[in-house]
Image 1 (cartoon, rainbow, N blue to C red):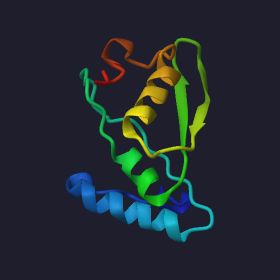
Image 2 (image 1 turned 180 degrees about the vertical axis):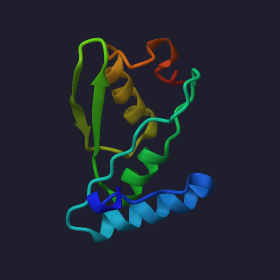
Image 3 (image 1 turned 60 degrees about the vertical axis):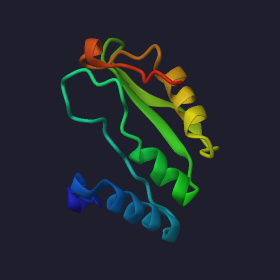
Length: 114
């Protein structure tokens, strides 16, 4: 994957990689980070928030992409420019994904916000 510009990531120290990627985003004129969902097949009610912290720290927008297996389509749901409030960002993401069917729809859960 490195021939396509991919950077393999060791996630054992999440905070370090988040800071490293945020710094790369700040320094680069053009850099796109694609983060795929957690690879677990089991239902998980709490989303990992590294994508949010990278975007917020680097002052870059979050582009929300999707793969809808039921409709057999992929695309961009939207772009979140204001990353100042994590709860507002997660609410927007929940809204964007509410009608998307993942590969394992019974295991996909939008995070319950408090």
